[in-house]
Image (cartoon, rainbow, N blue to C red):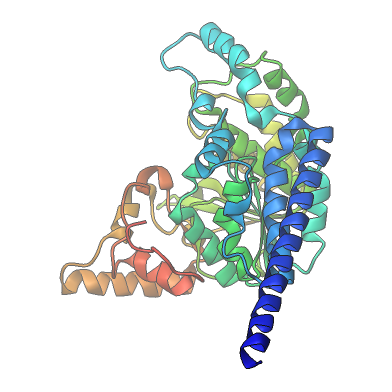
Length: 425
């Protein structure tokens, strides 16, 4: 009798487990089919968005059923990780880099031919949602609202960029960070952001609508000319110049803070308003000699942003590095700095650019003797007093590993929130 009762108990347990598994599988399958069908009706280009939502729905269903499935992502027969990366990266990255050593006519002809492949110019269901997603994301309690841009492939968003995001949330635990990026607005991008999302930080990647961003700004006609293939993109990778313009437009439309993805934040920006940082100063006069656009802090509809956008459209030159970025903001500010109606602050170099781009490598090196250790300690003390953050000048430093006990290693160790794989990044 005892054995019969035990057998009945075990049978009931198995039936209950099977029932839960069947219920979960049916619910998950129905959710995925509904999402994919819904998106396919609207646009065939929304598969990444559908997969992103399916991953989240599967996680919620798993919690409700009892957490019996260890991995929800691997149970979704959508795309392999490799396929997701390849598809997300298609039309981005090197394809935005024009051929070298060709005439302007040849480059324009190449650009017209490649235009259909450029995902950044595409209008679809994701771009149509852009404005609503921005308003919804920042409608919640946000200590500050901050933007980054990422036009490169999602696979290029590495550990160093993640560390930069971590330092943002260390300084602003209740801040909201939005990355304007089609490639990160994908299942691959979700996996990159998930460790921060799991810790309840407010971060999101959103596919930008460039036509909407530039509408009713001086850049609207310039953008339509470019998108029509009637504008020379220049020799500089177009992604760089589009990022220069996107940061200006998104701040003009919504206000807030723009920060480059290679910027390590040391203390909060909350007290800053309508500010831009000097990159260098004239040693004789003490006046600034060049500004930089890696960090911008401005109210919505600020007149200086309008002037920046106007200058971009009027003087665009895709053949000169920095012409549409740091040199642009320097030119405009030099003209309007003393005019009434332009209320803004120019912060000294130590605020955002405490180390020149050709000396940034020194911050990554381990001290090898007592003199170097004293220099590291003195530099850390100086940065803690005067600096909001450090621009890493990634073009110069992206191949330099962060070594233990270096200035950069100690900074990131003190200002990260997950703090994984710091050294060697």
